[in-house]
Structure formats: C-alpha cells, structure tokens
Image (cartoon, helix red, strand yellow):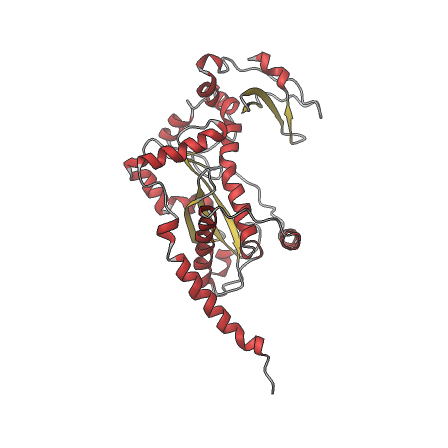
Length: 330
C-alpha cells in the first residue's frame, strides 16, 4: 500500500513547530516584562497620558479567547468558554506602543478574567513592588477596582462618581483601547490565534507565548502592521456565528476602599485645563436626538485636539452623539 508523503510528514512538522515555539517562548524574559525602573515607568505613563490625559498608567489589561480542540477527559468542560467553544483565556498587559508587557496563557476558557489576573505574577508585583506604588493599570468592568487597577464606573451613584464619568470615562476608554488594538494586530499577524490551534493542549501555551514574543520583536524592528486578510476574517466571522455569545456581561463589584480613593479624584479635564475648568455641578442633558429618550447623567466630556466636546450616550438606541453646543452648560 502506497502512503501519502504528506501524511507521513505531519508528525515531523508538529515536532518542529513545538520545538521552535518552545525555543522562542524561552526568550520571554528578554522581550516581555513590566517596566524595570522608575524612569521606564514614567516614560510608559507619559505615552499613555498623551493619548487622552489619563495619568500614571503603565499598562492596559484584558483577556482574549484562543480556540483549541477539546482536550478530552473529565476536565474538558473547564476549557469551554462563555462563547461555547473550547479555548484558553489568555491575559495580556500592553503599553501605549502596543508592546506586550505581560502574558498569561495557561487558564481554561471558563476562568474569569479577574481570576486570571488575581493569580498572576503581574498582580503580585503591582501589589508588593514599591516601584509601582504610584502607578496603575486600566481594565474594564470585568475586573474589580483596586489601587493598582482602575476600572470605569458601571453605574455611577454619587456626585464624585458622576464627575468621574463626566471627565474620565472617555479618557479611560481611549487609553485602554490600546489593548483592543494590540489583540487585533496580534491576531492578524498570527491568524492561528484567531482560527484556533489544533494541537495537544500541552503545546498551546508555548505557541501563544511565542507569538507574543515575535509580536514584540516586530514592534522593535518597526515591522508594519499586517493588513486584514478577507479570507481569514470571513472564516473567523463564520466561527463566531456558530458560537454566538449569549452570556450577558456583568460588572465585578469592588470592595477595595483604596481603589475607590484613588479612582474618585481623577479628573483628566482638570489636569489638562486647570481645576477651574472642571464641571462644578451635575447637569441634565436634553433628550436623545434620535429616539427622544431623556439621557439623564449620561453626558461625558471628551478631550480631542485641545477642544471641549460633549458626547451623549443613549442606552436605548445605543448611539454616541456629539453635542459641542452643550459646553455652555459647564
């Protein structure tokens, strides 16, 4: 019986990919690390500040799912994520240059983002290392607000929280958007992270870390961002449609007074234009121009090209509306 040479060569290719991935992943300490001294912390935070005026940020934090095949066995369902497919929940921290500063690629898809972060070496360093005492990460509402990790308010209740929403939420989103951009570039550069990895679960973490190391190397060498591949995008979209996410998102409640104490006073508008320019009272924006819903306390201030612009977000028609004429209310 004649054997297909390609079939015979698959095990060899798999072994080569595994060995190369492990060799590249072993370079992680040289290419992926948090700022190592105070000057580097200041440089990183200054670049973040230049995005939207959010101070003392040394990283944006978030997780993403990387598809895998079912690992089998009794624990297989632990790897099924909220989107109903098998995956690893990969956490990264990225700086303003889209350089990956930390990666954790070992948790099953069912693990919550906050669980991954709370059990990471980066979290321990931010808690205990005096170098990071005055700095913090930015995360979404999937994380609890801590002194070293600031998150947006999901539902502002007090005057201080409303002022933070007015002057900080857009700045927070614009600054944290670096992590979303990084994931987009990373998955375009290495489509296997979008389509999925069809190898043994034990070999997946090394491949993911190797991709992150190569991503940082590409940035260091000024490699241009990879263009979108229509075929890959179509395939990923098809996979997403097959596993539509029906799980509602929710905010992790925080019980950290230090996190609240650090988050509440932040007023990026005052940092840019002086304390006298900050909103002094809560105002009631007019109804949404699209659906006429009363947009109470949803007015947000955005700094863009040194101008004051108000954005109204309507939760009914889910539209972001520019309204420069409302600046006079402040």
